[in-house]
Amino acid sequence: MEIAPAERWTNWSGSQHSNPSIFHPYSIEMLQGLVHVYPKLRVVGAGHSFSPLVKTSDVLVCLDQLKGMCDFDQKECRSSFWAGTRLYAVGEKLATIDQALVNQGDIDKQSLAGAIATGTHGTGLALPCLSALVSEFELLTADGNLLRCTPEQNPEVFAAGRVALGSLGIMTRIQLQNRSMYRLREQIQLCALEDIYAHMDQWKYQHRHIEFWAFTHANTVILKSLDETQEAAQARPDGWMDEDFLLKICCELTRLCPGLNPWLQRLLNVAIRPSTTVDWSSRIFPSIRNTRFNEMEYQLPLKQGLACFEEIMYVLRRQKAPVFFPIEFRYVHQDDIWLSPFYQQDSVSISVHQFYKQDYQAIFDLVEPIFQKYGGRPHWGKLHSLEARQLCELYPKWHDFLQLRKTLDPEGKWLNPYLERLFIPS
Image 1: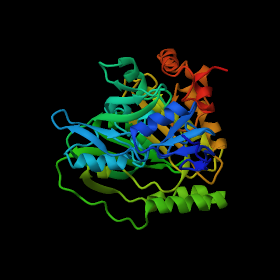
Image 2: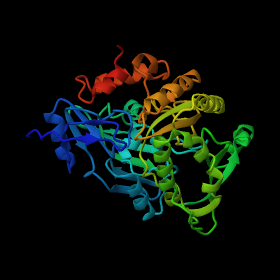
Image 3: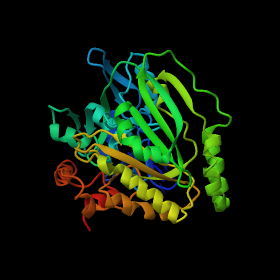
Image 4: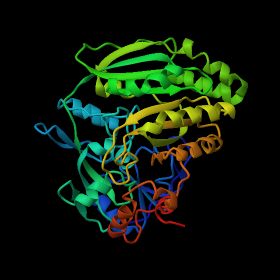
């Protein structure tokens, strides 16, 4: 097999780029051929990770051609998809067989395998990340063989492989445990920040999903809840301006004129109008996210979430941090996946974003010590500075994972410089 010429690759935000040889296999046999020939490979989906997980100057394998539904089980409400299938396509296919994802996040452009490998999640105290909804997967290992992984067959690989950053092999087929289609009632409203501190600990039990976005210079947050309903569909009301476009305009204005930042943030009461929408879950979950950004996200122990959020808000205000994007606050149920940030821990997820044209490092340097102070675990697809010696203290199964990884990949076929930093102590 000839070496493909080097191409320029960038992730969605533009913060990561490299010049690898890129292949687009359209069959498992072609994928196996690449694994047999090349000593180093990384796999890419939609490029929605902000960390340099797939950045390589060697071979990059794109799974976009391996997509679609493989099969489904109506009785057990399960379905299998090829790994390169985008999340929005998963929802569309499931709707044709009266199935739906139990939960998902508000961006649906990622590939299924990429979202699972990094522990992508939505919000809801009783709802786990997407990886925990995987009931079976097929793994292409470093020796070119296909491994079936279930709780009964290769159980250790199943326990470790659902959040593995592409370091154990290539997920090829993924089976999901779904449920029948259901409608959600979305309510968006403005809420005083003091009410968040006073009542959020109770509200998280009262809604299937709840989250909020807080602007550093505003005393009002955008509060969003989703609850299952039998109500008829109710269309999302037309706003006076597209919210994503408004966000981009405000980011550009505050980048060019930082003094406008507090003033524009306090116009929140004018820009955001309360609304109620009812639709199928696959249509309610996704939001338009065309304004590019870079992101840091940590998962905090449940009881530490509000205290961590309050300190982050205080520090960003005190430092007059040049950031317009709001801070996002969500809940995620614990799971049993070895390197999941939610391993044996119900969590609060806090995300800090920076407009892609602005320096994110200064902002993230301010908030990351606060995340670490409260015992946070980083989202694997988002930016963070932790290395092996720090990460091993956050995950009880860390050394078990490394031992399994070494067994499956003794030559380090799946490791790039970034993963070496994560897994190999300096």
